[in-house]
Length: 475
Image 1 (cartoon, one colour):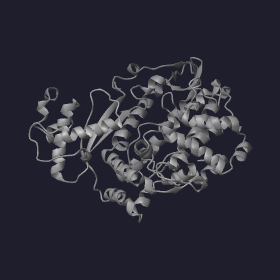
Image 2 (cartoon, rainbow, N blue to C red; image 1 turned 60 degrees about the vertical axis):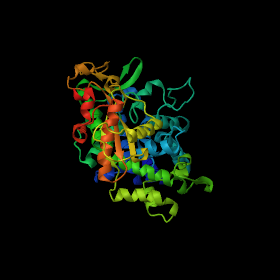
Image 3 (cartoon, one colour; image 1 turned 45 degrees about the horizontal axis):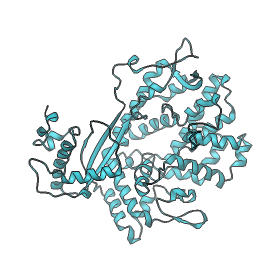
Image 4 (cartoon, rainbow, N blue to C red; image 1 turned 60 degrees about the horizontal axis):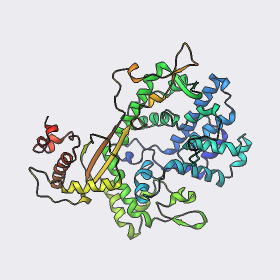
């Protein structure tokens, strides 16, 4: 891969090099030994592919007037889009920060913008950026909009892009596509994750690069692709779903992330990280200071594990259990009949209900407390909640490449999914005893009956005397 000198300069900074030590798939590495790749190589890949797409559009359609500035900004956004990830990637954001600081709505994209600003300032890159033709007042905003979408929080300006005018709106679909989710970030991690996980990749980004072109739709310029590529795009989203089911949401990987989160929560106030002005920050407050945040990587795991601080004993025990494979036990999985809006309070209430759900028949002499259970809710979708993302994509035909059309699902195949989202509820048992696990599974089946959830796949095996009690399950 050949990269612009400015990209190389950014790569050679401590803020970017930090990504070498953050696993792309977090705790999935504890399940798939091949998943040792990091955010570092993924970020370089996205920067490269983003450049390939914008250059292809420029060569194919010179009338778009894509400038060298535009190309460089898109490459920089692709390179820097994941600067804000914390230890163990999405686990830090979705599980740790959401529990350690529940009152703030923090996402890694915000940290990516903060880290990008800090990187540019700390390494005095503005003169170099100007040397390569960037107009800082516009282009720094443009790069950040490419990463995280519109920056304005004002209600009147919400959803408005300021970095580029309307005739360049298609550029916002290259790195992080808010319209349909088809972007270079996804194409890179599909190929990279499949390669490292040993899972066959059924989608092909090369064809997307080959057939992408810009068409005008309702007065807006959008990236479209050939009509014959609609199947390739459905394959791409099916591949995304397969990766979530087989790897990203693997039941063992998920519980390891839950255990790491518990260890981090117990260790939080005892981990001190020095930030700007010599001020000290904890694990959860380091996100407020980029100098401190630069020092947070997956190494926190070893830092806790090998610390001589006695206050970290509980956290150390949890991490030790992970290494010795003394993991919380999988009890079962179910689904609600309708999608639920799940809160932390609801999860705690469910854990209380699980402990109280004494089976109507065949109950074992085991008593539970809510703390014996972990309830985890997983959202599975095609990237746009209940929507079909292909409905937001436009296609052109060979006979008229300037006209964009919508291709509906029923025009493609009857084998395509009818629903594009589902909710999974998983339950884990924290103790190691076999008798308790057997009883926990019976409590779980009774709980599913009480809540009118879908029958667990192994319900007839783990609680054959209970499942006939639910009339719908019996039928």
